[in-house]
Image (cartoon, rainbow, N blue to C red; front, side, top):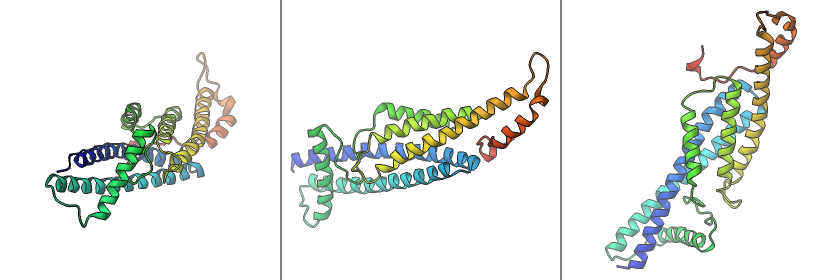
Length: 243
């Protein structure tokens, strides 16, 4: 039995399991984001919200692919740990040993340099900060209920931008899909500008159609009300919650 080898293999397994947890958190978050973008796109029907859905879906596919690679690597390292514990040879497993060696080298490089891992499929470049995990959990809890107006959608999209910007920091430029969270952050910012504009129309319409001091002057602003209504999009609400 090679105690040093066993120690290295156990460390690789631990790091892969941590990566698995992180990829699952990101995957669940992107599913939550995708649902919100679907609703916003249905309402706005513009290029930005359509593109955002495409980017979000692409990133989710990449994360799912990373999870698949991660599970394969965990399976391989478990087999290697079992073989090592039995004192048997790794002869005939060279291609599998090479995969785990690549993961091990990436982990060691990061530990020595104090930086992100070299990109290896199935392994997170770095640890997912606890603050990011908590923010994602908070967003998922908020997603259990739908925003009731454009102001609430503005807050929701803003929270998504903050979350995506945190994910941007986790993936170095050398990573295969590092450009996706960056692009998503940019497009979400554009969407939020439109959402803020819709919130302003919503507030203005409420002011123009509400009475003041017991008098209703809404008819005076009849033309303005019509013009605003033409620009105001329906609030994104799931089909089951429509009144």
